[in-house]
Length: 307
Image 1 (cartoon, one colour):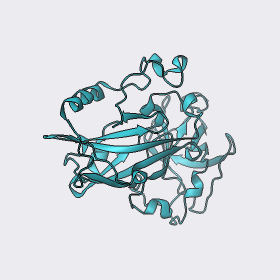
Image 2: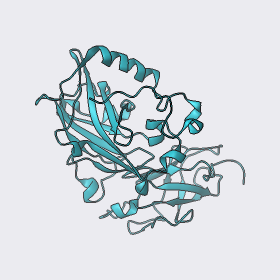
Image 3: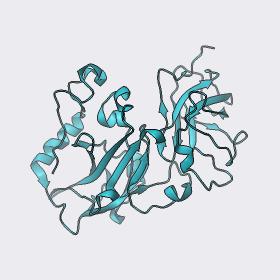
Image 4: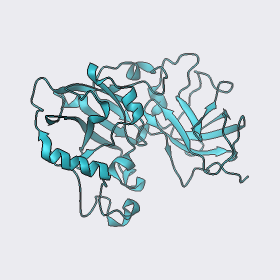
C-alpha cells in the first residue's frame, strides 16, 4: 500500500515557490493530521474482501441541472476522464461497505505523477445531503488542484494533466477498511488543463441589482463536450457574482457556441445581475459540467466602486 503523504523536505516545484511559505509540500489540516493518527491505530486492510469494494466513479448532475450529452448523462461508474483544474466536478462514488454516515467516508487520492497518497477534503454538508451510502453511493465535489496539492498555479500549469486513483476509507467501529476498485480505470480521475475554462474579467466592474454586465472568458476545449442541449439550457450551467446568479435568459440560447483558445477575448456574453449589493471584490464563479472555471487573480477585474 502506498504511503500517506505528510511531509517532504523539498516539494517538486522547489522551495522558492511554495504557497504561503509552508514547510510542507502538501500541507494537511489539523483535522487530517488527527485522522492519520486514528488510521494508524485502527487501520484494517480489507481491500481484498469481495464484500467491500468500489464499483467505480461517475459524473453527477451539476447544480440541479440536467446532464448534457452522453458523456454526462450516463451515471455508469467508469471513471472521470475530464475534470477541471479548478475543481468543483460533481462525481458519484459507487461502492459496497460504505459508512452510513456520508462524512465518515474519507476520500483518498493517489497521485500518479508524484506517487503519493493524499487525504482529500472531507465531504461537505451538500455532498452528504445528496449521498445515499445505504444504497451504495456517495457524491463528492472534487477539490481544486492547488488546494489538494497545496502547490502554486505556476507550477501546476506546467503540466497538461494530473491523474489520481481514488480509494475510500469508511471509518467503522471495528476499524477502517480501504475500499478499492477491481478495475483501476473505473476509479481513475484525470484533471485536464485543456478542459479547464478561464474567466478573465467583467465589464463594467461595478455591479448592482438588475445591472447588465459583460463577462469575458475562455472555455478552452470544454464546449466540445457539450451536446444535445435542451431549449432552455446554456453551454455552461451558471455564473454567479457575490453568490447571486447572473441571468442570461434574454441574451443566450441553447444554440450559442463559444470557441476556446482565443486569448483573453475568446468569448464574451452579457447577463443581468441578481439581487447583489455594490461591494468590493465580490467573488465570481462560473460552473460547467467539468467543474469550476479558473479565475486568474492577476487578470480578473474584481467588482468594486471604481469606474
